[in-house]
Amino acid sequence: MTGNNPLIGPNMAEFGPRFPPTSDAYCPRLRRLVYEAAKKLNVPKFLHEGIYAFVSGPSYESKAECRFLKSIGADVVGMSTVPEVIVARHCGIKVVGLSLVTNRAVVHRDLRSDPDAPAEVRPQEEKIASHEEVLEAADARAKDLQTLVKHLVEMI
Image 1 (tube, one colour):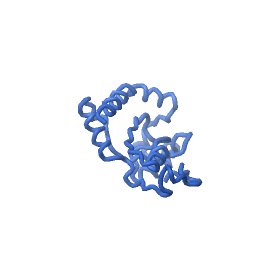
Image 2 (spheres, one colour):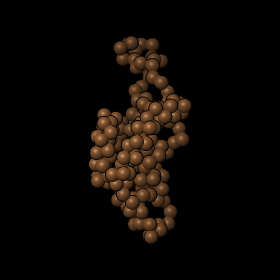
Image 3 (tube, rainbow, N blue to C red):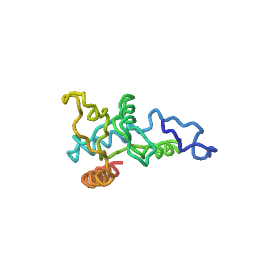
Image 4 (tube, rainbow, N blue to C red):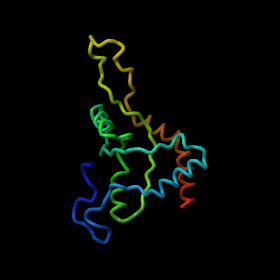
């Protein structure tokens, strides 16, 4: 559901088939190695496998988009990774995906503007994603992710 597939246009057969399968885009062996590396580093509590939904950006997701993506099974949302995975799989490259989650999506309807809504059903004040906060969150975990990738590469 990328909306704008990176393979649109004439196919270059030397890179791969016109319609590459992506139903199992991430290599099971590489996924296992990621877990093994995380276990060696004692960081498995930060590692979760899930469904990554792609949006084209460059804007953060709306509440409606987040609610929709959650309803169809998405665990995280991002503006990258998926086009690169599609191209890599088209070329026959084995892929594993790692994402560093840097902000929480806002998913429930804002009832603060409804004066008749009881306080119990009103959501707590939610922070709107700012690019500065996203970069700060990424910086906070960057070293852990670098270490994990380094161990993964050594295992491969």
